[in-house]
View 1: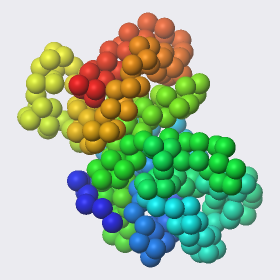
View 2: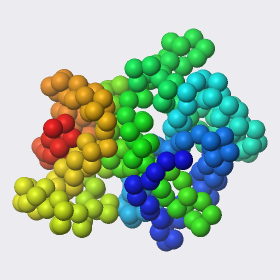
View 3: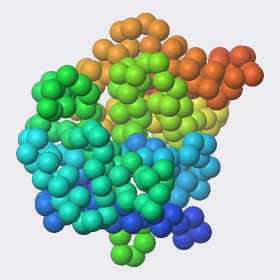
View 4: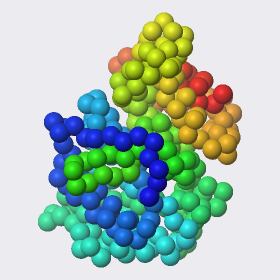
Amino acid sequence: MTNFLNHYTIDQNRPLDPTTRNVLSIVNRVAIELDCPYILVGATARDLLLFHVFGIPVTRATLDIDFALAVDSWERFQQLRDGLLATGSFEEGTVLHRIFLKAPNVLDRIPIDLIPFGAIAEADMISWPPEQDTMMTVAGFEDVLAAAVSVQVDPELTVPVASLAGIAVLKLFACHERPNTDKDPVDLYRIISTYADAGNMDRLYEDEIDLLEEVGHDLELAGAALLGLDARRLCSPATAVKLRELFVETDFAEKIAERIRVSRFPLDPERLGRVYQQMSRFTEQLIQ
């Protein structure tokens, strides 16, 4: 369904929980049957890579599971949605993009968000039917699909997942679209602050050693710079322009850093300087 840049395997000592594994299996099967390219995105993708693959602890419980679907029309999107509902494992929600994994107790239902992108979008925006009064940016999704990684959950299941660099790109657009929430900045920071440990140590000491030497062998800062470099490399020229436009707002990075500091380090205002330093190393490489 896509040409994967990297292949990872979940560590058998950190297996995926059975419920999430079941959701991934069903969505993967239906997407393959209907020949629909897709990727796992959002916090589940982040946690799958950071914790289950690389063993890096995660700090925010994930309640929903997000899938991005490459479709060319709302009819095609509806076909995928209907195909998932037809499995009998899901039930409808009150909005088009959300279905729920069935559970004995309605409070235990897991929300499954379906995000259409690709030819269905106009100027990287989708307008949700029927009224089309709710809009969402899908900038960067096609690039993230092209740079997806494959993750072997177990011998019977391998799924396409947004790379950590891809998630970072999507999180920047989300930070701009939802400036008053902490979730996206905190998710972004978790990737920025741990990227060196996410399978990138050899790269920093070999091919990208300049990034390490520039910051006095500070691995966190070098990892942040490497993340920015990897994110820039996966972006198409059009996406790169859109990212640069975000930072035309001179305080965009500062606002993200402050939201990170307030949410993650509420009792440590002095931590803002370090957070901003990490953000700066990331963005300097990203928007060159």
